[in-house]
Image (cartoon, rainbow, N blue to C red; front, side, top):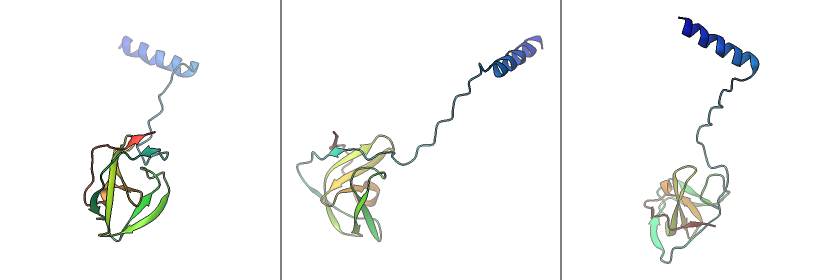
Length: 118
């Protein structure tokens, strides 16, 4: 009991004296905070089709923080050059003849990280 009372007194002294630091809670993981610059290294275009109905957004880079530059209609054939795993979100993105498309909107992706960060 004396030990518990001593610990309570120590905590009270630290709080009053300003020596008690409570670490800030980490923010939940959300969409990417920036638009990374990634270059395509693929030498062979691989066909796939858009599986998102009614259309899939085309992005200027491999992250939701990038700009939407176009849309591709459902079932449109696109050609994949390379894929990239966004390390801040864990999402796969594919560079196509249209631009960057999130892999979840394609019938199949390359999933081999052939694109490279500049």
